[in-house]
Amino acid sequence: MTLFGGFAATVTDVVVPVVLWFICRSRRKRAVYDLEPQGKPGAFEPLLQKYLHLAEFTIGLATGSIVLIVGASFLHGEEGRLPWFYASPLLVLAGSVLAGITFMVTLILNYEETQHGNPHTAAAYALIQTC
Image (cartoon, rainbow, N blue to C red; front, side, top):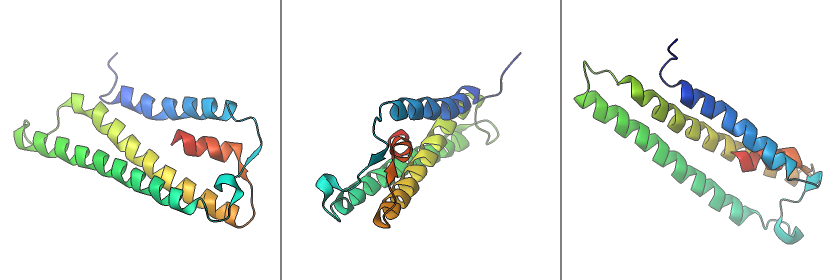
């Protein structure tokens, strides 16, 4: 029985984040966390900008790598098709793009929730750490 090209990457993109979330969640003892460093209002905003820029940089590297692999193989490949063994690296890169976007959205939404007085829970903290 032969598995499809990219099977290992698909398993990696699904299993690794789930395992990481359970590890991160099990390390959180408190139920609620404060997003503001040292309890100062607005102190997280400079850190938020740094986190978002780092995520943008990582997403840019991953999407650039996808374009480079696809473009190079298109120019030198057989009949303009990608070899089957490129499927796993491309899927892992696509998974990292999705993780980066999820990180950015989750971080912004959780920060906005804390600004409205809602608690930053351990599960949300673990999700951000996982992404």
